[in-house]
Length: 386
Image (cartoon, rainbow, N blue to C red):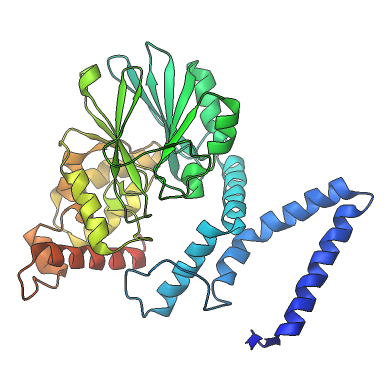
């Protein structure tokens, strides 16, 4: 058997030679500098390595490919995804993203504004190149909960500025751009609990959650809702507005964005549809706090599939004004999302007629909606903003 034209013995010789070279560097008199140099080399090359290795071997373990499994390019995407989530390359890639984002956006990629309610504050924290972490604060008790703290430095700076005590971390899913800060923050705050799904392999998880479990911190009542699809154990978190007489807040991770939804990496279109329907059952006034700043691109795609949607056009104009000044576009409301987010509109006849395959011979509406969602995801993955 050969690997890219190399016989197996030559492969082992090459790998052993590289390992020996690295060992010599590390044991040399200037080993400290060598270690830094070697680590820098790995970090510099990790992104290129991450996206090349997926094409070198067709037998790498992957998650089941939910869409168009015969497509080589999509299959390769899932091989790369497997490397990102299952190997040390994913962590190196995350560290590289973190370093670059700190250099490029020392004050964050967007200007955010906190939302103040009766004794509760929701503070968005811009991290990496387009992620959002959040602090949910009981202002009377001085207690805080962090959601998806990918950059521990940025989250810690906000904790110190607000002069609060971090007692819990809520992780929506395992991806490093949502869970990368768990280690440092749990070390800096010894009493801090890390919550998330036990199915997702979340780093430094201490308190596993299941569907409908409630986390209580002071006046904060936060319910976990199981929303698999993006990952097998993806959770969203719903802050109940009743205790502070305000709107409920949905922290949606990578399930739902302003006018968009996350990719289905570990599930099927039916799985993702069920998760989105879980969100649709919530009230129109629920505030949506997503995991990424994708609004302008997503609304551009929504205009392709529903060009005559006036609600989308009005929202796009507002978003463009916000982004011209690098202002955040969150939160929106679920009532707004129902009006222009195509991934929440698979029940709409106009969208079904434009894109959908129509109901099957059994007339199963959920089946046709899942097919429409699958087609929307395929189109979105190939869409390029103008």
